[in-house]
Image 1 (cartoon, rainbow, N blue to C red):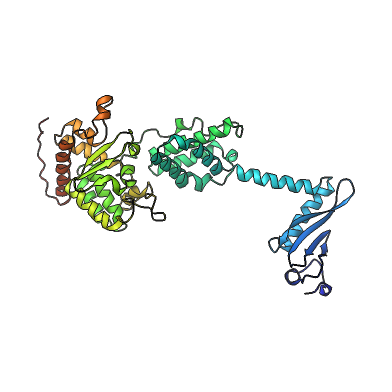
Image 2 (cartoon, rainbow, N blue to C red):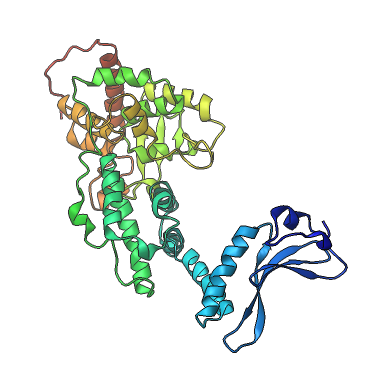
Length: 411
């Protein structure tokens, strides 16, 4: 459409989209000081002609078309005319709004959290850093990430953390609370926050992880074993649950494990100190049943560096809720967790006469002091025999072939 063919104003949408460029730039009046500007190259935009407080006329760009539609341009123009009528300079107001928008984008909780993470990361082991940012990305950023951190009140943090508690992840709740409290400490000491909204919340949250370590009774164990064997959803998670049972390691130690830590010929799993809670190497003897499961897992995931690669990013491990979610689907929510398999192993082994120090060594509850540091393969042969008995015992339990006998092994 040529500008001479315009028949009504405000300009119709069809007029805006079809106006043709000319040899020089021109403006068409839409109404009330709002103009539609067309350049020779076809670019179109909106401009407002307004009178400044000093009485001089000026132009103010309102954005390009079609990004800024006719309706939006008229709305912006009305707001700016109102400001001009009150003695304000619309150009100054526009810049102030833009600055406020930039400040808001830089004041989100996620941006502050990532700043904190980068500042603290050099002091962490790689596995620790990965777990921390993973917890924030999984739990916190979807809820609070895009919000200005100064606008999240303590009550919202309390409800958020209590919701995590209700999911049964007590340990993770405590970790997330500590991370977020530190993040706000960074804002406070750098003058970006006057107080820390997570201060004191720990007094009103659960501090014991009893729910996180839930485990079935000895009488319920055969049914649980059969439920795991019949789990139909993810084959690697089904195998992982059996490995948790057979090795009594922490879920994170298995979930994040790379194939490079395993020597299947020697039937050993060497977990480096960097991945252990106590920051000490841990050697795990592998029973025949554990080796069989690992070989099956190799057929599924052996082409990846990790035993349990993530679904979206194969270089990262599965979610820290993968094992517990599987147990929940089986109907064991609140009755059994991944960490609870350690309790089952500890109880069964001690009740069947295995020495306390052998059981504690298998659980990586190593003694303090020099001997604990240097005895990396503590009681290895004894534990190899103990864990083979345990694997055989579980197998018998699952198939209902166990005859309970009250006996004590030699100490």
